Length: 360
Image (cartoon, rainbow, N blue to C red; front, side):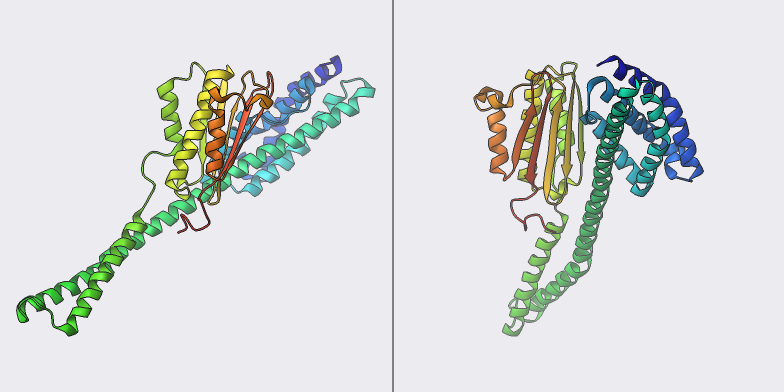
């Protein structure tokens, strides 16, 4: 970092409180719901993070928000959805943030020598744009995951209600009809139904069997603990050796075939085991995003990293097993790392083996 970058970065950090104060006042003047006390504190953290990204870009070069910041943004999206805060309010708030920040960004850049000021302002604006875009994208993922989960829960509630209605009304009616037929056989024909009623008796029995199968199918839910709980149980069992590990799972696991969910758990568990054993990390973030079509997951650490080109010979690390398991599920897994740069594992697997499995 040269002296000019340091001067501008320090100036921008000093302006941060003023930018946040101007932002809240502008949002209040516009009646934006983001200024509401229930929402503001977390939104303020996001705005502060964007300004800090700009300052960090001057100190360390251009960069994106790290995975931890994006997880925080996604969680905010989940909470915004639960509070009925519309994404349009977030987009408008981002526009206001730019408007109130720009004069301060210019003032900070003016602290540099004239020949450097414009370049540093452009770098800061570029980082501002990337930081806002990445955070809004993560926030929208969280927002959509909440809505998809609500849809899944609504579908489950509808399925259970339908199963009760079929069982209580149609099932009971057919059971009563079958009982009348059996009583008729017992009372009038020495326990043997006339041929004209035997077909009706068999048809009613078959219908009752079909209804029972339908009711059981409607009531099916994936048993056992979910991915998030299972991964946290694994972490508790092995101990994290003073490493902070965050696990976030968004979406409805009801969209995932049971055997597929188990495979995803095994893959993520192996990635976590590898990070805990070899990365020498202080922080690990696991992010899982489930949609009706696919499961996307990342495991990122801030450890020592490694050269991905040496991945193939490292059979002792379990990474070859991870690649094989993902491939058997029709998915893919990639490693992004470098010496001293941490490691990011990305996993993508279809939710089901084909387009019909799990459809309901």
